Length: 136
Image 1 (cartoon, rainbow, N blue to C red):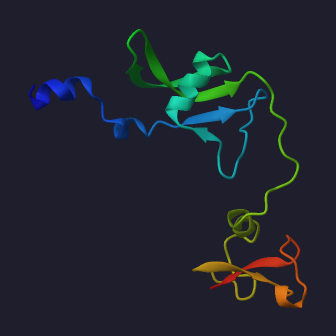
Image 2: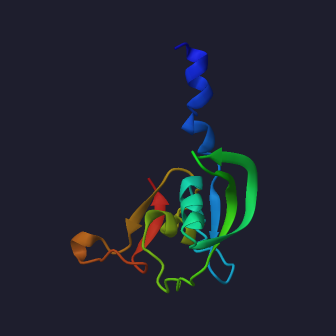
């Protein structure tokens, strides 16, 4: 078998990784904003096949299995409502987002880390009230 024969039937999966699907809750709001709720195209097709989501919009690209052909979904809506979390997760990204990606001491927007206002060595805890974005 020559190379042309094989490449005719074997797809490059890297070419399809750039087709994310926006996931909306049953009330048509995104599940999350930061980061935006996106699924890989494979998960979106699987959820549609299992009748867990409704497809709202699709890409022009098509994928095929042995027996079926699917247009890749670009926006899907969950059929069951998922109750959003009331508490925001304490993560480095969310902390930087709260502090608008700038140092809380000097206002610089360069290389950031985080700092405990009351040091942990003196009993300070890692919480929203005690941690701020700071220059590294």
